[in-house]
Length: 192
Image 1 (cartoon, helix red, strand yellow):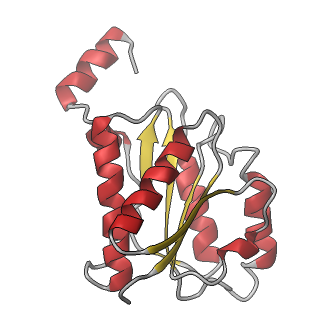
Image 2: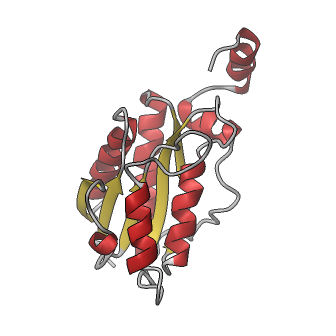
């Protein structure tokens, strides 16, 4: 598969998940994929997910670990339109989203999206990407690499990565460029 077709779709509240979607679309395109999006899922049904080799779906985690209100109708559409018959069989997928360690369910929207994708027949080919609060130089570089790896996995150039367990807080710190020492300092100071 020389130029896989990829859809990048998202819901966003403050713009951080939209920024992640734009970074992913740009990096996947630069890696040689034919990218559609990023598309905001508000007001759309899940039929837009059909016909692609790969899907990158994202949203911020809402409250205590539920879908954001802008993504929930899209998830319901996935359950109704794509889950019966596993319509997305053979499609590679991955999820991304915003998170905040102040909440008990850290970035759970990523896992909710992955679970729905699997229920619809898609194969999650790499661990979900979690960005805490707002992007920085480190997270932008990691996001671009994550997109390149996704394209390489669709092409068969990289092995598919187990997607469970999900990315935890220490791994998100690494994405964000926060060392263990800096995390300890922040925790001691009561900072995020």
